[in-house]
Length: 343
Image 1: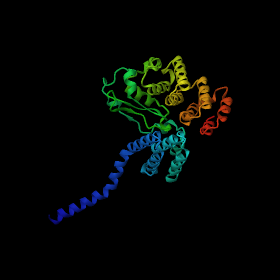
Image 2: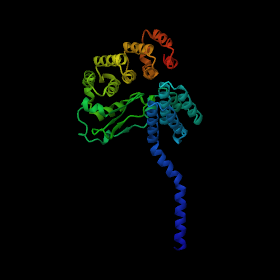
Image 3: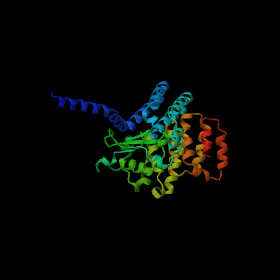
């Protein structure tokens, strides 16, 4: 090897080593959503399985990540989702440890701080969150007209955010991914509705008929949780997308399920999806207050906070608002101070 070729090789290697950190940063930026998502999903799974120590160890890894230390909004929402899951499992010591560690690792400001606190963000901030929309890649005939028996199976539901994703017609690949299972991702935007409806084959003009079909078929359905979640998305539609009669029937059905279901998962889903409605009826608010008064299960009453946060404008107009506030204040439970902030 002559001197010129040797020198060129040395310079090439030096340049490659110099670019390694930059390449690593690029690779990291491409996997932020994947890392945060997979870590959060596993933490929530461990909490559901009552492996609280394992979930906490994983949460601390998320807190130590470059994503959180750079103030990533998605990471803030993910950490809050884990904190909320600990609180709902009545593990306040684990929740406080994770939250304190996050606050110590990075001093969040602005929307990131609000997300870490579990607060409602302006739509401009929420719309900046990564949403993976695969529906554009679906062939026109890949999704047929909505069929509850087949298509409810394709919906993936979270305890804090309702519909998280919709799988394709094979139920193996993601057709639309809305976000992670945390309150940051719970409020429904128009883009979310359109992505979900497109993936499921639901025409905008058919929402009244689909809601009626879901309600009538609920008793015999094997996907009750998914049915409730889809009703929540349908009920979040604004304007004239739904008739007044359908809105009333839909909320009445969610209230009945919240009150009478023997399954705690379904009671929680019904309450959560009342929170997601475009507006809430006075009778629905009264039912949620009664639900909070009667239950002593922190896991199932967690979404009551979301009802009062997301529906605070509607609730502020109710003539019995002061009585509602007094009834909530009389409930000596973990979520009461937070709910009162919205009243």
